[in-house]
Length: 44
Image (cartoon, rainbow, N blue to C red; front, side):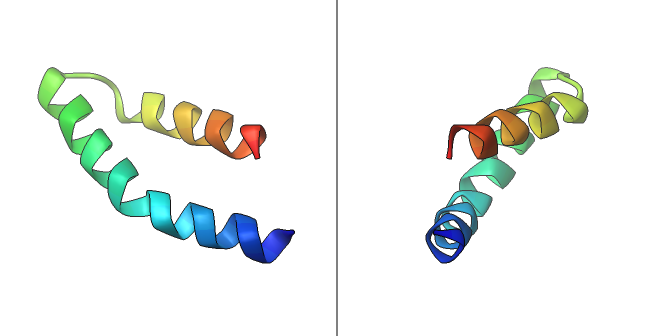
């Protein structure tokens, strides 16, 4: 189970980085991204 989650997390890393870049462009706080990551992890 942990291995699968690790793979999914690794796969989502590039997307999260891009998403964070978009947020920074919008002037959003980077902390918001961490909250989203936590929610994403909680889902799994």
